[in-house]
Length: 437
Image (cartoon, rainbow, N blue to C red; front, side, top):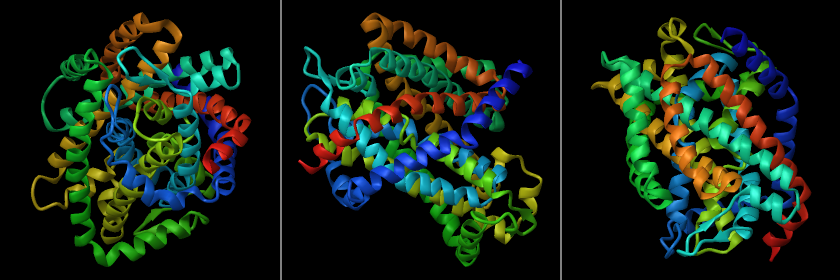
Protein backbone atom coordinates (compact mmCIF):
# COMPACT_ATOMS: atom_id res chain seq x y z
CA UNK A 1 0.00 0.00 0.00
CA UNK A 2 2.88 2.36 0.78
CA UNK A 3 4.40 1.80 -2.66
CA UNK A 4 1.05 2.40 -4.30
CA UNK A 5 0.65 5.63 -2.36
CA UNK A 6 4.14 6.74 -3.43
CA UNK A 7 3.33 5.99 -7.07
CA UNK A 8 0.09 7.97 -6.93
CA UNK A 9 1.85 10.90 -5.26
CA UNK A 10 4.55 10.88 -7.95
CA UNK A 11 1.99 11.00 -10.76
CA UNK A 12 0.08 13.79 -8.99
CA UNK A 13 3.27 15.81 -8.62
CA UNK A 14 4.03 15.42 -12.33
CA UNK A 15 0.53 16.48 -13.34
CA UNK A 16 0.02 19.34 -10.90
CA UNK A 17 3.48 20.91 -10.88
CA UNK A 18 3.08 22.27 -14.41
CA UNK A 19 0.75 20.64 -17.00
CA UNK A 20 -2.56 20.92 -15.12
CA UNK A 21 -1.80 24.39 -13.80
CA UNK A 22 -1.11 25.71 -17.29
CA UNK A 23 -4.13 23.96 -18.78
CA UNK A 24 -6.51 25.16 -16.08
CA UNK A 25 -5.17 28.70 -15.88
CA UNK A 26 -5.17 29.03 -19.65
CA UNK A 27 -8.73 27.77 -19.98
CA UNK A 28 -10.05 29.96 -17.16
CA UNK A 29 -8.36 33.04 -18.58
CA UNK A 30 -9.38 32.35 -22.18
CA UNK A 31 -13.08 31.97 -21.46
CA UNK A 32 -13.03 34.96 -19.13
CA UNK A 33 -11.74 37.15 -21.96
CA UNK A 34 -13.61 35.50 -24.84
CA UNK A 35 -16.97 35.60 -23.05
CA UNK A 36 -16.60 39.29 -22.26
CA UNK A 37 -15.81 38.85 -18.57
CA UNK A 38 -18.87 36.71 -17.88
CA UNK A 39 -18.22 37.06 -14.14
CA UNK A 40 -19.92 40.47 -14.33
CA UNK A 41 -23.21 38.58 -14.76
CA UNK A 42 -22.88 37.06 -11.28
CA UNK A 43 -25.78 39.11 -9.80
CA UNK A 44 -28.04 37.87 -12.60
CA UNK A 45 -27.00 34.28 -11.92
CA UNK A 46 -27.62 34.67 -8.19
CA UNK A 47 -31.11 36.00 -8.87
CA UNK A 48 -31.98 33.19 -11.28
CA UNK A 49 -30.59 30.53 -8.95
CA UNK A 50 -33.58 31.06 -6.66
CA UNK A 51 -36.00 29.94 -9.36
CA UNK A 52 -38.21 27.03 -8.38
CA UNK A 53 -39.52 26.44 -11.90
CA UNK A 54 -39.69 22.80 -12.88
CA UNK A 55 -42.16 19.98 -13.23
CA UNK A 56 -40.70 16.53 -13.85
CA UNK A 57 -37.07 17.54 -13.50
CA UNK A 58 -35.03 19.50 -11.01
CA UNK A 59 -35.60 23.22 -10.54
CA UNK A 60 -32.56 25.52 -10.95
CA UNK A 61 -32.45 25.88 -7.17
CA UNK A 62 -32.53 22.11 -6.60
CA UNK A 63 -29.83 21.59 -9.23
CA UNK A 64 -27.62 24.26 -7.66
CA UNK A 65 -28.20 22.84 -4.17
CA UNK A 66 -27.13 19.39 -5.39
CA UNK A 67 -24.03 20.87 -6.99
CA UNK A 68 -23.22 22.88 -3.86
CA UNK A 69 -23.70 19.80 -1.69
CA UNK A 70 -21.06 18.09 -3.82
CA UNK A 71 -18.64 21.04 -3.86
CA UNK A 72 -19.10 22.63 -0.43
CA UNK A 73 -17.50 19.84 1.49
CA UNK A 74 -14.46 19.13 3.58
CA UNK A 75 -12.32 20.81 0.93
CA UNK A 76 -13.58 24.13 2.30
CA UNK A 77 -12.33 23.19 5.77
CA UNK A 78 -9.68 20.47 5.72
CA UNK A 79 -8.61 21.34 2.17
CA UNK A 80 -7.97 25.00 2.94
CA UNK A 81 -6.34 24.09 6.25
CA UNK A 82 -3.99 21.72 4.42
CA UNK A 83 -3.34 24.26 1.67
CA UNK A 84 -2.16 26.82 4.22
CA UNK A 85 0.00 24.25 6.00
CA UNK A 86 1.59 22.90 2.80
CA UNK A 87 1.64 25.96 0.54
CA UNK A 88 1.71 28.79 3.05
CA UNK A 89 -0.75 31.71 3.19
CA UNK A 90 -0.05 32.41 -0.49
CA UNK A 91 -1.86 29.22 -1.46
CA UNK A 92 -5.10 30.93 -0.44
CA UNK A 93 -4.55 33.65 -3.05
CA UNK A 94 -4.09 31.11 -5.83
CA UNK A 95 -7.14 29.23 -4.63
CA UNK A 96 -9.16 32.45 -5.00
CA UNK A 97 -7.68 33.07 -8.45
CA UNK A 98 -8.66 29.55 -9.47
CA UNK A 99 -12.21 30.20 -8.29
CA UNK A 100 -12.66 33.69 -9.73
CA UNK A 101 -11.48 32.88 -13.25
CA UNK A 102 -12.88 29.36 -12.98
CA UNK A 103 -16.38 30.84 -12.93
CA UNK A 104 -16.04 31.44 -16.68
CA UNK A 105 -15.03 27.83 -17.33
CA UNK A 106 -17.89 26.55 -15.18
CA UNK A 107 -20.30 28.70 -17.18
CA UNK A 108 -18.91 27.39 -20.49
CA UNK A 109 -19.12 23.71 -19.60
CA UNK A 110 -22.61 24.08 -18.10
CA UNK A 111 -23.96 25.81 -21.21
CA UNK A 112 -22.86 22.91 -23.39
CA UNK A 113 -24.33 20.24 -21.11
CA UNK A 114 -27.62 22.12 -20.76
CA UNK A 115 -27.82 22.34 -24.55
CA UNK A 116 -27.25 18.60 -25.01
CA UNK A 117 -29.42 17.28 -22.20
CA UNK A 118 -31.83 14.39 -22.75
CA UNK A 119 -35.39 13.91 -21.52
CA UNK A 120 -36.83 10.84 -19.85
CA UNK A 121 -40.37 9.56 -20.18
CA UNK A 122 -41.27 11.02 -16.76
CA UNK A 123 -40.29 14.52 -17.91
CA UNK A 124 -36.99 14.70 -16.02
CA UNK A 125 -33.71 15.57 -17.73
CA UNK A 126 -30.19 14.19 -17.62
CA UNK A 127 -26.90 14.86 -19.34
CA UNK A 128 -23.32 15.95 -18.87
CA UNK A 129 -20.03 16.40 -20.74
CA UNK A 130 -20.09 12.79 -21.93
CA UNK A 131 -23.19 13.53 -24.01
CA UNK A 132 -21.59 16.71 -25.33
CA UNK A 133 -18.55 14.71 -26.43
CA UNK A 134 -20.72 12.15 -28.19
CA UNK A 135 -23.26 14.49 -29.81
CA UNK A 136 -21.14 17.51 -30.73
CA UNK A 137 -17.63 16.07 -31.02
CA UNK A 138 -18.83 12.66 -32.27
CA UNK A 139 -16.16 11.11 -30.07
CA UNK A 140 -17.60 8.12 -28.26
CA UNK A 141 -14.19 7.01 -26.94
CA UNK A 142 -13.56 10.34 -25.23
CA UNK A 143 -17.05 10.23 -23.71
CA UNK A 144 -16.41 6.74 -22.34
CA UNK A 145 -13.05 7.77 -20.88
CA UNK A 146 -14.57 10.80 -19.19
CA UNK A 147 -17.37 8.64 -17.77
CA UNK A 148 -14.91 6.08 -16.42
CA UNK A 149 -12.87 8.84 -14.79
CA UNK A 150 -16.07 10.28 -13.32
CA UNK A 151 -17.01 6.96 -11.75
CA UNK A 152 -13.51 6.65 -10.27
CA UNK A 153 -13.59 10.25 -9.04
CA UNK A 154 -16.98 9.69 -7.44
CA UNK A 155 -15.61 6.69 -5.57
CA UNK A 156 -12.46 8.53 -4.44
CA UNK A 157 -13.39 12.23 -4.22
CA UNK A 158 -17.06 11.99 -3.37
CA UNK A 159 -17.01 8.82 -1.34
CA UNK A 160 -13.54 8.11 -0.01
CA UNK A 161 -12.31 11.57 1.00
CA UNK A 162 -15.60 12.66 2.50
CA UNK A 163 -16.16 9.40 4.38
CA UNK A 164 -12.66 9.65 5.84
CA UNK A 165 -13.27 13.24 6.97
CA UNK A 166 -16.68 12.34 8.40
CA UNK A 167 -15.24 9.42 10.32
CA UNK A 168 -12.31 11.47 11.61
CA UNK A 169 -14.65 14.22 12.82
CA UNK A 170 -16.83 11.77 14.76
CA UNK A 171 -14.04 9.60 16.17
CA UNK A 172 -12.23 12.76 17.26
CA UNK A 173 -15.08 13.60 19.64
CA UNK A 174 -16.59 10.17 20.42
CA UNK A 175 -15.00 6.80 21.29
CA UNK A 176 -16.61 4.95 18.38
CA UNK A 177 -14.87 2.47 16.07
CA UNK A 178 -14.17 3.82 12.57
CA UNK A 179 -15.60 0.59 11.18
CA UNK A 180 -19.01 1.21 12.77
CA UNK A 181 -18.99 4.83 11.62
CA UNK A 182 -18.18 3.75 8.08
CA UNK A 183 -20.96 1.16 8.04
CA UNK A 184 -23.52 3.62 9.43
CA UNK A 185 -22.53 6.32 6.90
CA UNK A 186 -22.74 3.83 4.03
CA UNK A 187 -26.21 2.62 5.03
CA UNK A 188 -27.55 6.14 5.58
CA UNK A 189 -26.21 7.31 2.22
CA UNK A 190 -27.65 4.24 0.52
CA UNK A 191 -31.11 4.93 1.93
CA UNK A 192 -31.03 8.29 0.13
CA UNK A 193 -29.44 7.08 -3.10
CA UNK A 194 -32.14 4.53 -3.82
CA UNK A 195 -34.68 7.38 -3.87
CA UNK A 196 -33.19 8.74 -7.10
CA UNK A 197 -32.11 12.22 -8.17
CA UNK A 198 -35.25 13.94 -6.87
CA UNK A 199 -34.79 12.61 -3.33
CA UNK A 200 -31.08 13.45 -3.42
CA UNK A 201 -31.93 17.01 -4.48
CA UNK A 202 -34.51 17.39 -1.70
CA UNK A 203 -32.04 16.28 0.95
CA UNK A 204 -29.43 18.65 -0.49
CA UNK A 205 -31.83 21.62 -0.46
CA UNK A 206 -32.30 21.02 3.27
CA UNK A 207 -28.70 20.30 4.18
CA UNK A 208 -26.91 23.04 2.22
CA UNK A 209 -28.60 26.09 3.85
CA UNK A 210 -28.39 24.65 7.37
CA UNK A 211 -24.74 23.63 7.25
CA UNK A 212 -23.68 26.79 5.40
CA UNK A 213 -25.36 29.13 7.89
CA UNK A 214 -23.99 27.16 10.85
CA UNK A 215 -20.43 27.21 9.52
CA UNK A 216 -20.44 30.74 8.09
CA UNK A 217 -21.94 32.10 11.30
CA UNK A 218 -19.14 30.54 13.34
CA UNK A 219 -16.45 31.86 11.00
CA UNK A 220 -17.95 35.36 10.97
CA UNK A 221 -17.94 35.35 14.77
CA UNK A 222 -14.23 34.52 14.72
CA UNK A 223 -13.58 37.24 12.15
CA UNK A 224 -15.34 39.84 14.28
CA UNK A 225 -13.38 38.66 17.30
CA UNK A 226 -10.08 38.89 15.39
CA UNK A 227 -10.98 41.95 13.30
CA UNK A 228 -7.80 43.77 14.34
CA UNK A 229 -5.64 41.03 12.79
CA UNK A 230 -7.52 40.64 9.48
CA UNK A 231 -5.41 43.27 7.64
CA UNK A 232 -2.22 41.43 8.61
CA UNK A 233 -3.76 38.13 7.47
CA UNK A 234 -4.68 39.63 4.09
CA UNK A 235 -1.20 41.08 3.74
CA UNK A 236 0.33 37.67 4.40
CA UNK A 237 -1.92 36.08 1.74
CA UNK A 238 -1.00 38.53 -1.00
CA UNK A 239 2.69 38.89 -0.14
CA UNK A 240 3.42 35.18 0.28
CA UNK A 241 1.61 34.41 -2.99
CA UNK A 242 4.68 35.83 -4.74
CA UNK A 243 7.42 35.46 -2.12
CA UNK A 244 8.63 32.61 0.09
CA UNK A 245 9.88 35.06 2.71
CA UNK A 246 6.45 35.72 4.18
CA UNK A 247 6.12 34.74 7.82
CA UNK A 248 3.14 34.77 10.19
CA UNK A 249 4.17 34.72 13.82
CA UNK A 250 6.96 32.25 13.15
CA UNK A 251 4.98 30.05 10.72
CA UNK A 252 7.08 30.39 7.59
CA UNK A 253 5.82 30.69 4.07
CA UNK A 254 6.92 28.30 1.36
CA UNK A 255 8.21 28.42 -2.21
CA UNK A 256 6.00 30.28 -4.65
CA UNK A 257 5.86 27.18 -6.84
CA UNK A 258 4.39 25.15 -3.99
CA UNK A 259 1.93 27.92 -3.14
CA UNK A 260 0.65 28.01 -6.73
CA UNK A 261 0.49 24.23 -7.04
CA UNK A 262 -1.25 23.73 -3.71
CA UNK A 263 -3.67 26.63 -4.13
CA UNK A 264 -4.71 25.69 -7.66
CA UNK A 265 -5.05 21.99 -6.83
CA UNK A 266 -7.14 22.64 -3.72
CA UNK A 267 -9.12 25.27 -5.63
CA UNK A 268 -10.08 22.74 -8.28
CA UNK A 269 -10.82 20.13 -5.64
CA UNK A 270 -13.25 22.41 -3.83
CA UNK A 271 -14.96 24.30 -6.70
CA UNK A 272 -14.54 21.66 -9.46
CA UNK A 273 -14.46 24.30 -12.24
CA UNK A 274 -13.21 22.55 -15.37
CA UNK A 275 -13.73 19.03 -14.05
CA UNK A 276 -17.07 18.55 -15.79
CA UNK A 277 -18.98 17.55 -12.66
CA UNK A 278 -21.24 20.56 -12.11
CA UNK A 279 -22.56 20.49 -15.73
CA UNK A 280 -24.33 17.22 -14.88
CA UNK A 281 -26.62 19.05 -12.47
CA UNK A 282 -27.01 21.87 -14.98
CA UNK A 283 -28.28 19.34 -17.52
CA UNK A 284 -30.77 17.94 -15.00
CA UNK A 285 -32.35 21.36 -14.35
CA UNK A 286 -35.26 22.83 -16.28
CA UNK A 287 -37.02 26.16 -16.52
CA UNK A 288 -34.14 28.31 -17.80
CA UNK A 289 -32.38 28.83 -21.12
CA UNK A 290 -28.99 27.23 -21.61
CA UNK A 291 -27.26 30.59 -21.11
CA UNK A 292 -29.15 31.38 -17.92
CA UNK A 293 -28.52 27.88 -16.56
CA UNK A 294 -24.83 28.48 -17.20
CA UNK A 295 -25.02 31.65 -15.10
CA UNK A 296 -26.71 29.75 -12.27
CA UNK A 297 -24.03 27.04 -12.32
CA UNK A 298 -21.37 29.74 -12.24
CA UNK A 299 -22.66 30.94 -8.87
CA UNK A 300 -21.71 27.58 -7.36
CA UNK A 301 -18.02 28.41 -7.83
CA UNK A 302 -18.61 31.84 -6.27
CA UNK A 303 -20.25 30.44 -3.14
CA UNK A 304 -17.74 27.65 -2.78
CA UNK A 305 -14.40 29.37 -3.35
CA UNK A 306 -14.92 33.10 -3.05
CA UNK A 307 -17.17 32.87 0.03
CA UNK A 308 -16.71 29.61 1.94
CA UNK A 309 -12.97 29.21 1.32
CA UNK A 310 -12.38 32.91 1.94
CA UNK A 311 -13.97 32.98 5.39
CA UNK A 312 -12.22 29.73 6.32
CA UNK A 313 -8.82 31.07 5.34
CA UNK A 314 -9.30 34.42 7.05
CA UNK A 315 -10.63 32.77 10.22
CA UNK A 316 -7.49 30.62 10.41
CA UNK A 317 -4.93 33.23 9.37
CA UNK A 318 -6.27 36.08 11.50
CA UNK A 319 -6.09 33.79 14.53
CA UNK A 320 -2.63 32.63 13.46
CA UNK A 321 -1.43 36.23 13.34
CA UNK A 322 -2.86 36.74 16.80
CA UNK A 323 -1.23 33.64 18.29
CA UNK A 324 0.81 31.29 16.10
CA UNK A 325 2.05 28.96 18.84
CA UNK A 326 -0.84 26.43 18.72
CA UNK A 327 -0.49 26.13 14.93
CA UNK A 328 3.18 25.14 15.09
CA UNK A 329 2.21 22.03 17.04
CA UNK A 330 -0.91 21.24 14.99
CA UNK A 331 -1.14 18.87 12.04
CA UNK A 332 -2.07 20.19 8.60
CA UNK A 333 -5.69 19.11 8.90
CA UNK A 334 -6.13 20.58 12.42
CA UNK A 335 -5.72 24.31 11.74
CA UNK A 336 -9.48 24.86 11.64
CA UNK A 337 -9.91 23.08 14.96
CA UNK A 338 -7.33 25.40 16.51
CA UNK A 339 -9.23 28.43 15.20
CA UNK A 340 -12.64 27.12 16.29
CA UNK A 341 -11.33 26.39 19.78
CA UNK A 342 -11.59 30.16 20.30
CA UNK A 343 -15.39 30.06 20.09
CA UNK A 344 -16.99 30.72 23.50
CA UNK A 345 -18.88 27.41 23.62
CA UNK A 346 -17.89 23.97 22.29
CA UNK A 347 -16.04 25.30 19.24
CA UNK A 348 -14.35 22.04 18.30
CA UNK A 349 -17.60 20.11 18.74
CA UNK A 350 -19.37 22.60 16.48
CA UNK A 351 -16.68 22.24 13.80
CA UNK A 352 -16.93 18.46 14.02
CA UNK A 353 -20.67 18.72 13.44
CA UNK A 354 -20.10 21.00 10.43
CA UNK A 355 -17.56 18.55 9.03
CA UNK A 356 -20.00 15.67 9.40
CA UNK A 357 -22.77 17.62 7.63
CA UNK A 358 -20.47 18.87 4.87
CA UNK A 359 -18.96 15.46 4.28
CA UNK A 360 -22.28 13.65 4.19
CA UNK A 361 -23.78 16.24 1.84
CA UNK A 362 -20.83 15.78 -0.51
CA UNK A 363 -21.20 12.01 -0.36
CA UNK A 364 -24.76 12.12 -1.62
CA UNK A 365 -24.07 15.03 -3.98
CA UNK A 366 -21.20 13.25 -5.71
CA UNK A 367 -23.24 10.08 -5.99
CA UNK A 368 -25.38 12.03 -8.47
CA UNK A 369 -22.34 12.54 -10.71
CA UNK A 370 -21.28 8.93 -10.45
CA UNK A 371 -24.79 7.76 -11.31
CA UNK A 372 -24.82 9.99 -14.41
CA UNK A 373 -21.58 8.42 -15.61
CA UNK A 374 -22.73 4.89 -14.75
CA UNK A 375 -25.98 5.49 -16.64
CA UNK A 376 -24.05 6.54 -19.74
CA UNK A 377 -21.72 3.55 -19.57
CA UNK A 378 -24.09 0.75 -18.58
CA UNK A 379 -27.65 2.06 -18.65
CA UNK A 380 -30.10 2.09 -15.75
CA UNK A 381 -28.93 -1.32 -14.51
CA UNK A 382 -25.46 0.11 -14.09
CA UNK A 383 -26.80 2.78 -11.75
CA UNK A 384 -27.93 0.20 -9.19
CA UNK A 385 -24.58 -1.59 -9.32
CA UNK A 386 -22.77 1.72 -8.91
CA UNK A 387 -24.84 2.60 -5.85
CA UNK A 388 -23.83 -0.64 -4.14
CA UNK A 389 -20.14 -0.12 -4.96
CA UNK A 390 -20.40 3.50 -3.83
CA UNK A 391 -21.66 2.41 -0.42
CA UNK A 392 -18.72 0.00 -0.12
CA UNK A 393 -16.30 2.84 -0.87
CA UNK A 394 -17.93 4.97 1.80
CA UNK A 395 -16.88 2.29 4.26
CA UNK A 396 -13.40 1.87 2.73
CA UNK A 397 -12.80 5.61 2.81
CA UNK A 398 -13.53 5.58 6.51
CA UNK A 399 -10.70 3.17 7.28
CA UNK A 400 -8.03 4.11 4.67
CA UNK A 401 -5.06 6.42 5.32
CA UNK A 402 -5.65 10.15 4.81
CA UNK A 403 -2.63 10.71 2.54
CA UNK A 404 -3.62 7.98 0.10
CA UNK A 405 -7.21 9.22 -0.10
CA UNK A 406 -6.13 12.81 -0.82
CA UNK A 407 -3.56 11.76 -3.43
CA UNK A 408 -6.13 9.63 -5.24
CA UNK A 409 -8.49 12.60 -5.19
CA UNK A 410 -5.97 14.91 -6.85
CA UNK A 411 -5.26 12.26 -9.48
CA UNK A 412 -8.95 11.66 -10.22
CA UNK A 413 -9.57 15.41 -10.48
CA UNK A 414 -6.89 15.69 -13.15
CA UNK A 415 -8.14 12.64 -15.05
CA UNK A 416 -11.64 14.13 -15.27
CA UNK A 417 -10.45 17.61 -16.14
CA UNK A 418 -8.23 16.73 -19.12
CA UNK A 419 -10.90 15.33 -21.50
CA UNK A 420 -13.45 17.90 -20.32
CA UNK A 421 -11.12 20.84 -20.95
CA UNK A 422 -10.11 19.43 -24.32
CA UNK A 423 -13.81 19.29 -25.22
CA UNK A 424 -14.29 22.92 -24.18
CA UNK A 425 -11.41 24.08 -26.38
CA UNK A 426 -12.77 22.17 -29.37
CA UNK A 427 -16.23 23.74 -28.91
CA UNK A 428 -15.14 27.21 -27.81
CA UNK A 429 -16.76 28.95 -30.80
CA UNK A 430 -20.09 27.26 -30.12
CA UNK A 431 -19.97 28.40 -26.49
CA UNK A 432 -19.35 31.99 -27.60
CA UNK A 433 -22.19 31.77 -30.12
CA UNK A 434 -24.70 30.46 -27.58
CA UNK A 435 -23.69 33.19 -25.14
CA UNK A 436 -24.14 35.95 -27.70
CA UNK A 437 -27.50 34.57 -28.85
